[in-house]
Length: 197
Ligand SMILES: [Zn+2]
Image 1 (spheres, rainbow, N blue to C red):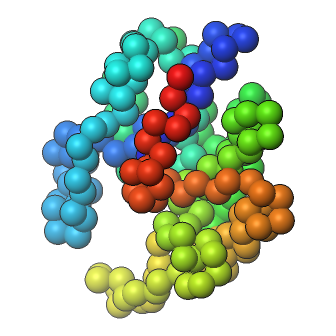
Image 2 (cartoon, helix red, strand yellow):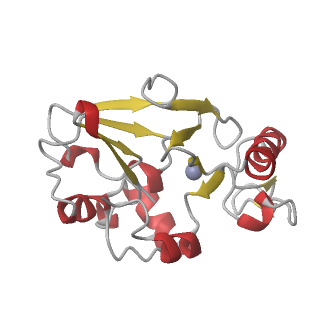
Image 3 (cartoon, rainbow, N blue to C red):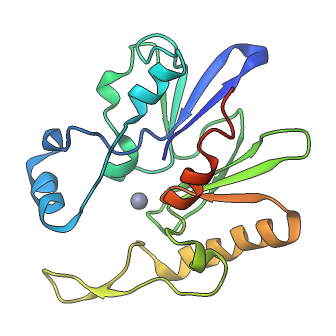
């Protein structure tokens, strides 16, 4: 999932994450080969066509792209951005509250955005991939690495990522902040047009 945040007073367009690229064969060969074996990615639309639908030209109209982290399904194809676009990786963005959300990899970012007068959303990106984990009803899955046989999970540090999941849960349950996960396709299906315009 990618987000376009248009700040009308300053006429600024900020994109948060570029998502996965559609031409997966242009990823580095080792990654492409791994995706062919392990990932069944359906990519009906990528960020650049969504931007064009919103009448935003990626070549000239994007001021800044903020990357939550540098996993391939979040970095898209930055070469398609114009030369004037500023890229921010990890902490450093000033227009919103960027929250250090370590554990997925270290340096992973979340974003707290005021979406309306009384509406705040917390974009967690990959702090967790599953709403049941956010709700405290399930735990992060652990599996055996195919090469090493060592137990691993989707996060670099399971313990630290779980601490941050509980912070996101507190925002949701105690402060009525809407928490949105990057890989929540059900949320996207229900809310596709909600923040447009
Ligand atoms: Zn990730």
